[in-house]
Length: 119
Image (cartoon, rainbow, N blue to C red; front, side, top):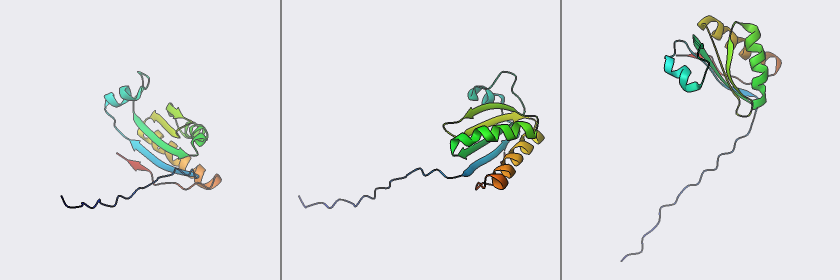
């Protein structure tokens, strides 16, 4: 039996290096009802869903404050350990809140952010 050569395997190590950034700002304009249920939102939750991810994760507390003061939205989920924020409201309010958070974080906290996206 001939000697077989093993393929060289490349090993990749990924590290999480927290920076000051918003990595997702998205509006789900017209979600299916099942999405609200799967997310565990209140039974009366309706309208658009705004989704954000922020690092460091504690900054979602500031984002929630800015979002709720900017427009008529309700916080559906806030994860201060993972950096996720989800809120609901009419499409215009959700977009206004997302834009207000992006603007505030860029101008006042000097965060790197992303473009607002929509589906």
